[in-house]
Image 1 (cartoon, rainbow, N blue to C red):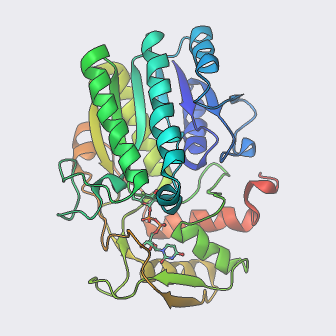
Image 2: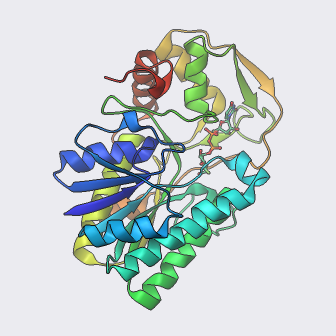
Image 3: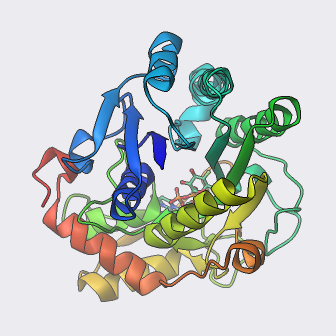
Length: 329
Ligand code: UFG
């Protein structure tokens, strides 16, 4: 089986690449390297450096390869930036995904695993969040992902293109000797670990007056390895059953910002100074996934809890304090 992995040099994509190779899939990574890291890829992964706005290059890639399916990770993900520069997000996430889907249909590749997000649900009207919870994104990033889900549905109806959309909650952790390296970094766990490394003075807690147990926001953190295991199950299912579907992907457990910091203190042995700061716009108080659908239908089970997530991330950050700018093992 041969899989095209867009965004395969990004945080989650690069972990998927390792697992696909481990499971004997043939792969080609298509990544612009605008945010991805060449060093996150193993030597045996074939990388085509390209942008999804390059229709000619994409078409050539599909013509020259007999792909069985696509895993589509490539996207801009920074919520704050999406509000300041919506055009950049609509162009890269929506228009470029449309380019990809058109190239697929043209070349008769009709299976895709899509990286969707909990941001579809905005301020959810129920917790835990199931697949049928109302979708009402409150930021441009979430809206681009919802539009893509709708495009996928329309492409299925019109062209028989089958998809599985995996809606990630808070992905974190590290595996395969690679890890999370965003620039700028905005995610809580890597930021907290940068404080432990001495690269930042303190962590700001965005909001301490939410109506949660300790006043800070609650999120559902899922180990990147569990996330990738779900991708492998989804891919197998898509290749065999040829049916479109949507799954929410989280641990089903919520941890507050304060609990994350406390766990990181224990794991790292560093005091990790934290200061109260004002709320960040657009942050829902609580996001917790109901992942029973994927557990039932694909037999997926999350294996790792918060300790293992933070431990694995810490191991990687300690070895690679400057991320992929330094050598990775
Ligand atoms: N937080 C802080 N201080 C920081 C950074 C984050 O207190 O310096 C808080 C946030 O306010 C939030 C929690 O930590 O309550 C987690 O924040 P992240 O930025 O790590 O993650 P989000 O929950 O905001 O976002 C993640 C993904 C997005 C996705 C969203 C919903 O990063 O891409 O989940 O799925 F849109």
